[in-house]
Image (cartoon, rainbow, N blue to C red; front, side, top):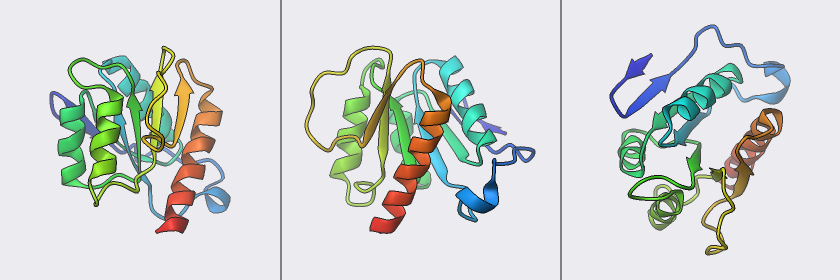
Length: 149
């Protein structure tokens, strides 16, 4: 595990994806998870690593932006309500940049989201989430983005 004070990259070498030969590509998709709550980041990192994803975490929009400059993720999961900049601010940054504008974004929140500009994010889930449905949603979005590329 590689860790800094505001972000981490986690690859669990023991994690074995379920039914890997039938459902997943040969390389581990890279997911950036953005949330200001450390417990949420830990839970998401462990869950997604268990399902065969390479997980990068960030505790703010600014940190997430730096993480994307270090290496583009295949998908972004971002919390809506965060201090300073919100998940919608991150979505706007991602959509405005030609390098990142096609990255699928999943918004998650414990509150109702306001109606926003169309196309800022690709899907949404509420906290607490049905984790099985979330993982299926992530795979669907990643595959769809790969077919568009």
